[in-house]
Structure formats: C-alpha cells, structure tokens
Length: 229
Image (cartoon, rainbow, N blue to C red; front, side):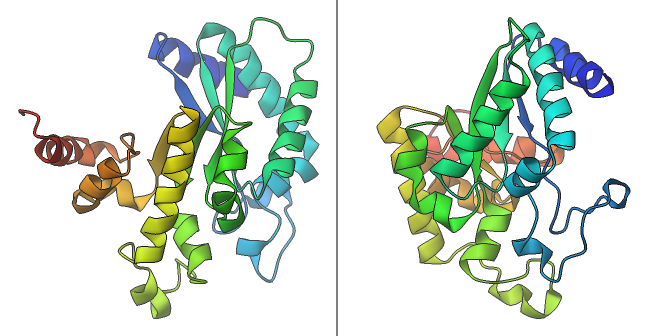
C-alpha cells in the first residue's frame, strides 16, 4: 500500500506524461541489509537485478501490483534491470502479468535495461518483445571491459571513448530504429555534454541526467543540431 501511494502520487503529478520506473534493482553496489540478501564473493555477477526479482517473489509481486494500481492514473513504463536474454525477460514479464491478473484498467509498458553484454548482442531479438529500451552505460562499461567501476586502482580503464563501446551502442540503436521503438540512455554518459553529439548521431535523443546538468545538455544538443537557443 505504501508503494502504491508513492507511485500514484508521482503518476498524478506527471499529469499524463509517462512515468519511467526501474523495477527493484538491488545487488552489486546497491545493498539493502534489511532485506536479508545473501553475502556474495562477487556481487556484481551474482543475485541481482532480474535474478533477484525472479528469486524473491515476496519483493517482486507487491511492487508489480503497486505499479499496476498506480498506472490507472497515468502511463507507467517499467524497466526490467539486468536482463540477460529474451527468455529471461519473457519469464519475468509473464510472472508480472500473473501477479496483476485481477487488476483492471492498468496502463503499463514493459522495457529493459541494456546493461549486460549478452542482452546487447541480442538487441534485435529483444526488440521483438519489448516496448522500449534504455542503455545502462555504467554497468555496461563494467561488464564489457571487466572493470570494477568502484575500484580506483583500475579507474583509468573506465573509458567511455573506446570504439567497441560505441559500436555496441550503434547496434542497439539500429535495433530500436528497425523496430520503431524508443531507446534512451541512463548513466554517467548522459551528463557529459561532449558525448551528446555522438549519441544524437546514433539516433539516441533521450538521455537521463541529473537536474543540474539539464541546461548544459540542452545547449550542447541544440548546438549540434543547429537549433537556435
């Protein structure tokens, strides 16, 4: 009930604009001791994201029902975290639908985070079944280059300018374009205006940035597109 009230308040405040919400994404560097999650030797590769949602229906089902109830007041776009392939997404989406089978009038859209390389390599197949996608660049960089993004000793290898990274972004963008479905960017790259022209050239025109960067990002985008300020 508490989740429903929070989601409903946001949905109503948006007054018809879409509410994008990531399903519970814990594990890795996102700890929650009060949920009694297992200690893991390598949590970045462990029981997190979609695996956690599949393994903890006591957490997943109440959130699914809260979102479904809140979406009666406006559209909610649900982002499934750490999806690894088509089958995993379909299983999780079906469990979501089963959890809300008795709730009518909901307005939900189902998308994923592209942050695991296996999912990125299956972008075309995933876009056959998802409503939209969002690229999670922070984790994607970590997994592409086998680098702990929280380890200062290897921070110099956390490089957003490497060609293979941009090649992969281009393949995901092409899949979105081929299917005529939305694609956005979530992660540190959106807050670095020097990369916005390259994202726009790929056809990615929706980025997630912190409030203090919004103005700078708009200026950079308008300059690249030749749009008057």
